[in-house]
Image (tube, rainbow, N blue to C red; front, side, top):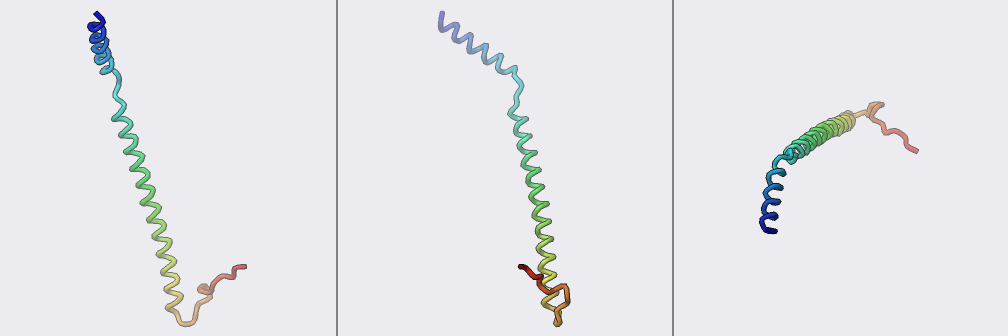
Length: 79
């Protein structure tokens, strides 16, 4: 009798457990969206950083290339 109840309880758990909504797919989609947004922000940040560094290199190159140093090429005084 106990074996019969155990089997019946297992069957009911399996049947009722299948009725619950599956949230594994939802969380996977949420994680994928978070990873995509983070990757997009990182690409935008690296692009902005690249442009800033490239501008600085061009400015330094222009200051070095000109024989008499222009006024804007002089280093700022730091105290």
